[in-house]
Length: 246
Image (cartoon, rainbow, N blue to C red; front, top):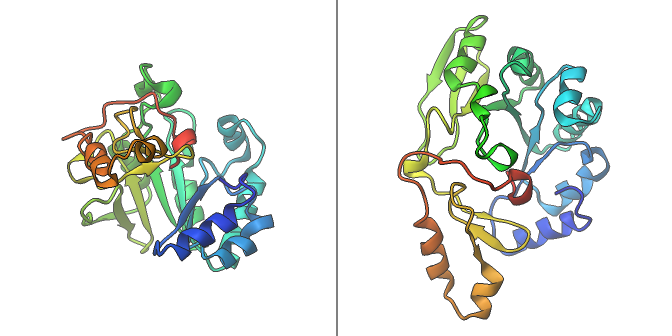
């Protein structure tokens, strides 16, 4: 999203429409040059993706030697006074060695980090994504080797479950696969083409521009998309999060 030149203007207009909270998900590399404009536009918080604190592991995952840029982006957002969360997708045998170092990095920065189970989406759809999958239980096991953990009760419709270490630092795990939250999911996603998705398991979203042109009532569209939600668990999808947003 930070490649969109009119991003600060878009955020400003969303706030003017009366949307109370506007959040941004990014890899953080472009934040130092635009954070002042984002802050001025009314941006409330930022989720920054960081899958390793080790430069070589970071580069092997992202295919770009940009760890320092991401770290600069994190510092820039903190300095601007914008609320920051960190996201890490855990890949078994690739960056699972980074779980504790990233947790300690987030503690040092006084930030919350969320570890995400790998989802069967996009290029992984129909493939053996379980070969790199690491469950919430396994992630917790890594952390429990160093810290005592206390689980925090989950809020209804929350995507993450949270824990606190015996040193008082909080972190979350988004366990879409091992602890699905489909039964009370209230999320809708709108991509850059105006297509609305009620469930990531269903790639057949509704084009709002076409619906409006055809005189379809917005409430009907929302009802249709909400009706696509799974009763229990995510089923996998050819959709890519890069295309529809985090």
